[in-house]
Image (tube, rainbow, N blue to C red; front, side, top):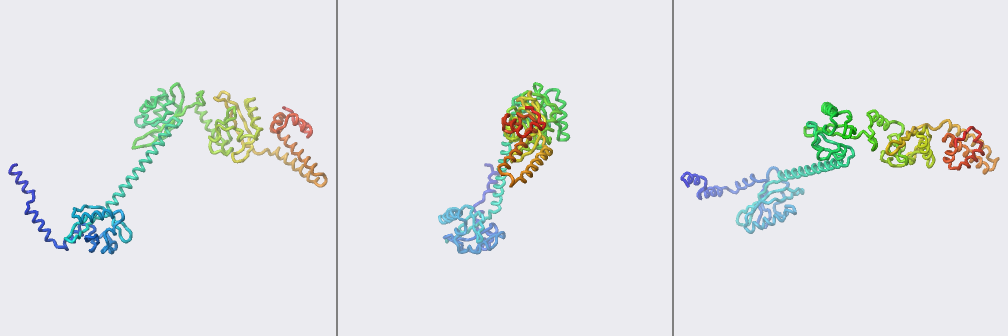
Length: 486
């Protein structure tokens, strides 16, 4: 070691004389100065005896109220702390009694109003009689900080869980959606997300589809349309539906929505084929508009197969049938809501299948909750669809005022005449006559509903044709101008 290094060590290593001198200075501090020093360097100070009893005034900082400590003197220290802190007090007192070096411990001091104060405290041995000085530091700022950290961590965990659940729902919706959906980077035009339906429609493996240029998945003649779509989305944030050509010359319609994320623009593109059924019949723009109009038209529209099962229905039909959604009607038989039970629907289907169409067939539509409306039904058979289907329009009509008024007047006049005979004719004769009147009115109504088709009228009334002919002859209806179309 060089002389320079030796001199450097001598300058920085305290000598015995220096340590003794510092100790001598400390021994010269009087008790009042020592008490002031402890009080100023800590938040709470008190003295306990060998039995753990607080025997002197409690010194505390200005942050505390004196009311918190007025009853501490004379109490056992262990009785002034919370239950979970008492084992720590016992250990500290045992260490003090055995002469072991004390260490900082965190305890909760209880106060008279029932408030718990978190304090970091240490015991310093004082004198030869087993007394000790308890020096404590207020841990409320640290505890408050810890609580805020815990609350922040819980908030982060909750937000992370919410985002994880949202992403799970997003992934699930993308997987199960039958609609082709692609997420496009607005800057590069690349596909950054796609669902299996999009891969199926574009006839590409999902892994190859993700990362590809969006325009590369369509015919080269559509590049101009896609560029116009990008320009419209960047400039106005919206676009009209665009018809694009897929592989095999199949047509599809693309619509897109713009959104921002991390200062980047993305397009959420939806694709759906312009075809009906499995035949791949292309629907023009005007036909697509006609379909939308049919869905919103005030007259009811319903499409069924030849087994009378509903394939689709518009909002007006659902309203008349008192249904909340099309799914409630799809797959159900039409006669659940249309026609008089067991009568009209069979006649309607037989006529439309036999003639290819039917016009202004009078019947009723029955609501899910019991309402009944008079409607006129027109229908057309579309045998070229898959499956072959029948479309019906249902127009609400006012009740047949002429026929109903005539029948009502006849019935009222007959009832008035019958009541005049009360007391003059036996009751059984009056009942038989009233029954004949009602029977005649029902037969006339059935003939009007079926356009004087006696075979259909007999089915509607639940009679055989021979029985109907007998009743027609008995009531004289055959002489009133009803032709026989049966």
